[in-house]
Structure formats: C-alpha cells, structure tokens
Length: 488
Ligand SMILES: [Zn+2]
Image (cartoon, rainbow, N blue to C red; front, side, top):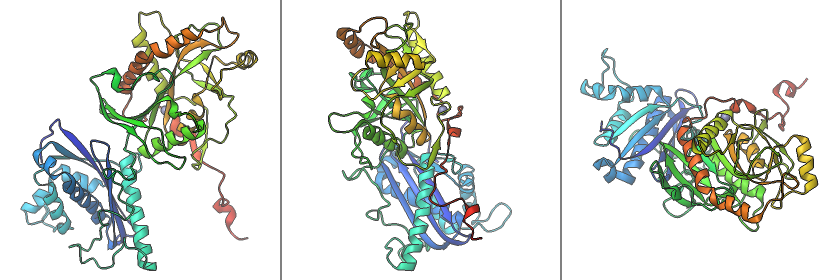
C-alpha cells in the first residue's frame, strides 16, 4: 500500500448487485478524476454472487483507471481512493487480509479455503505498486458516486437479462470466452454506459456536494477566482451541460476546504430568450446530477421595512411567492413541504460568516425576514409595495423563488444572504440609480468572501437540519395504492 502523499486523488466508487445469490448479477464503478471528469464502467454476469460482483466493480474500475493514468499512478502523483459499498471487501482490504491469505496459499487463519481466489488475485495485481486507500460507504446514504454505482449495477442486470431474452443486447454476451473468469464486462466505449468527458462529446456533470448560486451582488466578479483566496482551487470554468430544459448556463467547478462546489452566475439567467423558469430548471437539473446537498445563494433586495439600512444583510427565514410562474419543477415525484423553507443550518452558517466579515463596520446582519418574491425584471409599484408591507414582507426580490422549491425537490438544503440595495417604492425615500450602482459593483468582493467563508464552515454533508424530512413521496400516482387495486 502506497503512502498518503499530498498529490491528487481519483475516487473510485464500486457496487455490485445480484438478484438471487447466486443469480444474475451486475456491477458498476464510477471514477471521478481530479479535474471532475467522470467515467463509468459496468457489466453483467448471468450467474454469480453478490461478493463476486462487488469485487468485479473494483477490479474493472481499477483496470479502467490504470488504462487512463498508469504513469501518474506509478509515480505516486495520483492516488486512488476506493469507496466501497461492500463492508466485506472494504474490511478485507483495510486489514490486509487478502495479502495474508495469499501468503498462506489462500487459506484463512482458521485454515478454510478462501472463496473467489481468481478475483482476489486480479485485485491484488491491480493494486500492486500504486498508492491507494479504502473506505466503506454504506449503501443508500445519498453519496452520489455510490448511488450511481448502484444504479449502474442494476441497469447492467436489467440490460443483461433483456439481452438474453430478446437477443438484442450487445451488452450481455452469453459467451464469456473473452473474460477469463466468466464475468462479462461492457466494452470500454460506445454502449451508452460510458460517459467520458474528455473526447469533447457529451459531458457528464462532475460530482459536487455544494453549490453557490450567484446573484446581483457577485455579478461583477469572476467568482471565485477573482477573490484570490488561497483555500480555493478553481478546477474548471465554463462548464456547459445539455439538460432536458435546454443547454445549461456556464458553471464553474472549484474546491475549497476539501469540498467540491459548483457555481453559476446571476441565478443562471441569460439574455435574451431563456426564460427564468427554464434557467432555474437547468441549474437545478445540473445540481441534482452532481449530487449537490447544500446550496448557498445571494442576491440584492429592496427594503419593504423602514428599519433596514442600505447595505444591511438579510438572511430570510420565510417567503411569500408573488410570482406568476407556477409549476416550475423538475417533475420529480415528491410532495414538497415548505414548513422551514430555508435550511436553519445553512442560514446560521451564512449569518456567522457575514457577521465576522462586517464586525466593527457598523453594518448589520439580520437572521430573520420575510422575502416577497416577484417576477421582475422591473421593480415594483408603490401600491404593490404597500400591499407587500401589509402582508408582512420585509424585503422584496426576484430570485428566491423558484430556487427554494427546486432545492427542496432535489433534496438539497438552501439558504441565501441578501444585500439591501435600495428601498422599495414609497419606503423611506426614493432610491437613486448611482447609489444602486455603487452597491451593485462595490459589494461584490465582500459577498464573495462571505460565501467562501460559509463553504469552509459548512459541515461536509447535509446533516443537522430537518430539510430532508420535508420531502415526501407524492400521493399523485397513476396507480391507486396497492390496498385498493385488488379485484373485489
Ligand atoms: Zn437543511
């Protein structure tokens, strides 16, 4: 086992599945390269066991990795981190049992023969001379790569079985002659399960647990590169992905404090012909593909309250949707509860980050507020503002909706920090264009730093809040519930 150098690492997620044990089985492996490139490998075996499929996932994942990066692995510039669904394989590797078994002629310490010797042999050979480490990732805990490997394994079974019955599947080859151990593997390219982004073709969305939605406050800034923060490493800029709602706006992928973050400017908005609803759907579709769990947003707002000052920060804890866009969703089968629409953990992190940045300046951070969302792009009329005040609104803006719904739909935590850029019509005094412009351009760096500070402070997962409990399976299904579907 190699050392834990400070070099780059590639993540290998592996999972196997078997319907019956033994029975038809599949495996899936997902490789995430340091530049965000994702490659996937999967395969099918007509009769196998769970453990064999778990081993095959790692073996074929490692085989692909060594094809791609042999030199970097050999030199130690690149190491591989194995994230395995199987406690059996992860523990064995962690404790170096397979090497012991080999030295004892593949007998355990109690003398009984080790199963799957053929596969352990291959695995040890593939791990030879490269730096690696291993972690057990329990299944179905929302880890993106793990979920993806699981999906690949199941798809491989489905396609394999289909290929055997309707003879249409090139994926499932009944003859296993080209594989020494009776396991079929997808060819490296061209069967739809391999999504490589290096050929200039269709690009897979890289994994990222965090996202930042930039708004008017960081609009004038190349976030995060322009902040020159030593903790930040920009991995790629200008990432555009095809989505079911049209081509996405450009994203930047960066790393901060070991967290991978996708960010998009100005709520994904682009002039002139992409609707705001579609822009938001594109952004959140990409976030979902990436496995984003926590989102920080920022934006400018008008004050409905006479108590707020320009340049105050407000972290709203609730909202009133006065937009006329309805049904802006990704169409996922969930009932969304908006009891605590803003993640309490995310809001607290943003508040602390902002407070630390403005300490001693006399500027204020408000940890509560009702955000009234309008369509825009125009500002609101005096009478509208009067109505919003009577409803109980504190600030008015155009970005929190539909983002707050879409975040809940993809199961991500959402919180935003909003800079008061002007008074709404009829409140305190008329706003001036120059003043608005100063705030628009002058506060970008401060807001950018607050966002980076918040990312650094955030827990690595989505833990500590109730957000996940506010997304339930939809009750609006085509089939009636099972209890009612039985014939009388
Ligand atoms: Zn949350």
